[in-house]
Amino acid sequence: MQKKDGMFSATVMQAFAINKSPLPWEKAISAGVCAGLPVLVGLLLGNLPYGLIAGIGSFSPVIAGFSNITKEMEDLQEALQAIGKVRIS
Image (cartoon, rainbow, N blue to C red; front, side, top):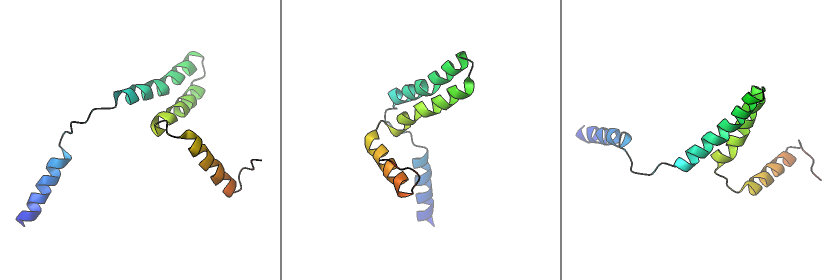
């Protein structure tokens, strides 16, 4: 029984431990600007719904981490062709 108690307390201590890894501040600020700026422009131009949609769309590359977007687009194109929704010549 003491072994289970030791494992439980170790798990609890590990769950609440503060790691000394640096925070990705650049990514967080970039995400805030990418999401907020289109919304602000939409609000100033009097079309908030379009600003919200643009904010969501511009936030996507930040979440994806600006990975190999060309490869992802090719994969998406192949998947859409496979299910027959899009015909690209």
